[in-house]
Length: 202
Image 1 (cartoon, one colour):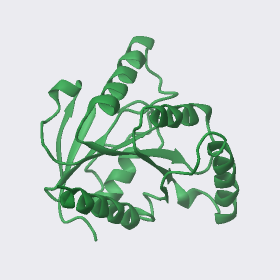
Image 2 (tube, rainbow, N blue to C red):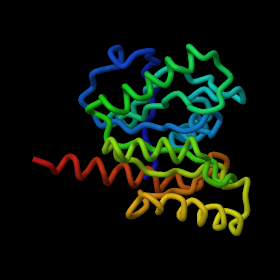
Image 3 (cartoon, rainbow, N blue to C red):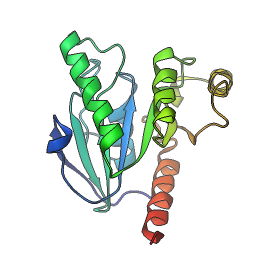
Image 4 (tube, helix red, strand yellow):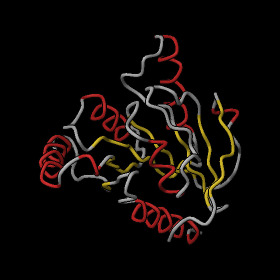
């Protein structure tokens, strides 16, 4: 089911300043320039809901978007090769870890990964940290329009092998493209089903 409404709420430099909504939150995270804002725009079917940039590290706050008045999508700062100063890098890392570890309304993280590349150490280490801290997440591969199906299958096989060295099974996996809209419906259906399960809890 497509979104009927998507609204930018605000950007917040600290978790303590984020809105106390009481609604489920889902968050996008990944290496800088992996396509978080572009995928968010594709989900909302709006070109400029989230500001995109070719410059890595542009997102430096918690960006909140209200979806269908029922849940929030949070665009987190990217990690990795962003060309920012060491103090800023440490500040962003603290912001990310504080949000992920302490935000009680966070239901699930979507870890965005560029499907054109084999596993990157920083991504594997971050997902390992999530597992060690009991943070539920899904793997969302981006830029599917930039790669052939055969190459994607080869890259994913390497990911599977790397992950299963320490994981009993893989988390949910999605293949997406912000250019073609591939995977957007599957992601939204997954979130909707999760929200329905939450609503049924006592």
